[in-house]
Image 1 (cartoon, rainbow, N blue to C red):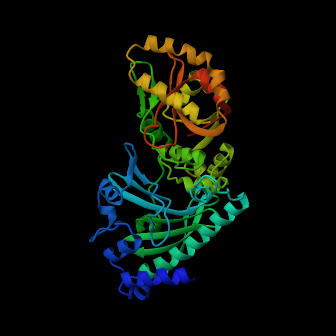
Image 2 (image 1 turned 120 degrees about the vertical axis):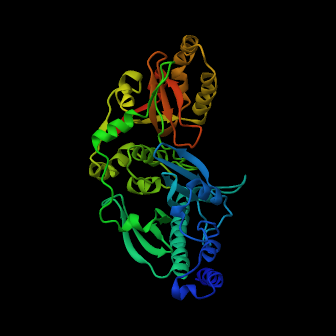
Image 3 (image 1 turned 30 degrees about the vertical axis):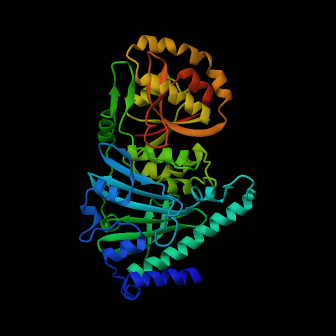
Length: 421
């Protein structure tokens, strides 16, 4: 409670002590309290160019598609927002304009790493201690952030956001200068501050979903056919899962956003019962998004067969990426990256195909080095070279990497699925 009183005193000073009563902090006061130059001195961020706001906040471009763009930052440990440590800051854009800003505080993914040993000889905390620490941090962040926001923007109203069922959140909403400030807190899961346009919450008749016909045309337009035989889906949103095992929820976010369905990996991790620090079963996230998928007139289709061109071609040709469960390791990734450097310089594709004979023969040895469970997207194939293209949720630079069908076969955990019409 001493900390909360101290934080409130600082905020009261920033807001000339009238904020607690009126909730009428100006942009300068709000930015000072946040520790981030989010808001312009006049108007709203919805009127600004998204890249300008992202640059102002120090966010890095994460992805840009014909429909949207995303920026993200995993801040340094010493950074503070409203007196609390943020673990991820993101900005999404539509049509070049800001659509939303999200700041994630204590959570069961990013926060767990802070309790690991940081120096040689330091005793590792017990698992039960790690659980107590991150859960305590979530509760403390929730209390401190709510008090800080009340000092700046007044009392909150209760709000339900997201899709009904597992994908729904309860939040505390405060409207401030044309912005809706949503403090979302899910016990033992995460705390987040989301800044969205009030109309997105108040519109009783939001834009209708994309028809299956229009979606097919849109997806088909994203399929790129190259002279070397590569058939690849381009323009899939990238999501950087960060230093945590969120490959499944991050990959699902990418899949859903590609299909025009709003998604967030932290919410998906909550709905799919992701373990602290990471670890999610593919079937759990597929089950969690079931209602949301059906509400958008889409369906989940499990794919039988192995991860090879003849199996995935049907979906890639339609512009639909395939979610694939596999085993991987740092060594596997290093080998794929090294081969991608050679592939990017190739001009003689007959020679390239011949050069893959050795990796095909060594596929079983590669499998012995892979011990970590992972999920990524299959986004392309090449029948001539017998390769498939992978896209991992590791951020820019991992949008497109190729491996042979033989390597994919020995790395596969046997589960593949798509979200389609």
